[in-house]
Image (cartoon, rainbow over all chains, first blue to last red; front, side, top):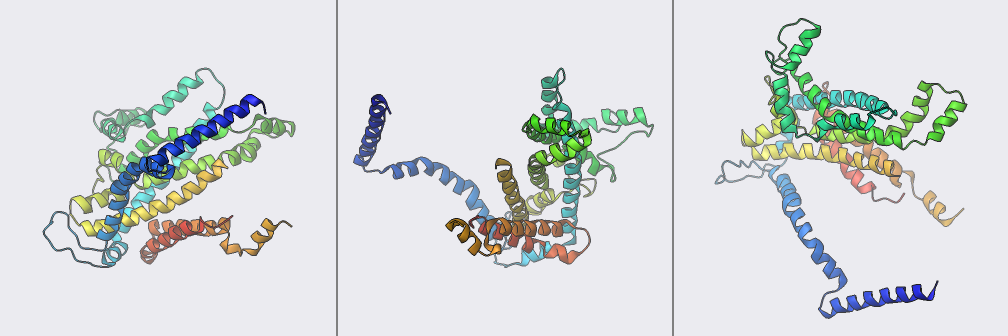
Length: 316
Length: 66
């Protein structure tokens, strides 16, 4: 080490010691000052995240009704949970949610992976196409929901015209039909979020070293073998991550479906989150809906744990 | 054999982070399947407690050493 470096390092140490002494002189240690800096964030987190969560857990054991503030709140124990977990209606809403999550995940994964494989090829305008494909996921769900209701209009909407261009079936009412409404929301969610899956798959594809494919070429592997034995195992953690993230998001899907169908026709597209909002802010069963929210929260939190595990796997 | 690997071998299989996290993850997945399956009502009724058990055990075992 040169004399100059030693002098520089020595100066740094002296400065640090001087600063520390200065703060100690004011009566605060470095640790206390660090706590002062992070205290506002912690307080904000406690006020807007932790306290409401604990309050919801408390309310879930009561018969509270938010629209009757003067009414005495009674402790009902696990009765709200028993009612929810014994209700065939809520079981049905959970199945509707699972149906929506399953189909969106399946279609988005297949399309996202296919698009990523296409975009990964070097062709003219590759960058421009990537940008165009990514546009839907940058839009607000409320905006997407609103303009897809126009697209789905049976008389004037472009979707009905497009279907009739190929098959003459007359006006197609996607949102009003009991059989088609679920597919209407699946199509819109797929249109909006396939680019996200594509983006993560593309990151996985770009991380595969070219030497692996060169070695496979030497071994005379065909295109399918290269995909099955090199590409797929290498991008699997990325794909898992994308599917888990979208799965969690779609499990608590609210805005897009409310804009498109509001849970209708009847309750065909009423997802658990929409039903929860109805119980909480239309029927004002606050205690009951708090228990409902806790059940959904624990489910999403459990999925979140798996997501973090997958994330760590990708990192490593 | 190094001290570290000897210490690792002393810890029972179930109390190592990897397998324990795997079991907790499995419990969460089974609970979610029970929640959304359309066949048996009693499976739906016991789904929440299964997910809760899986989630809590995941939080505990994620602090176990590797």
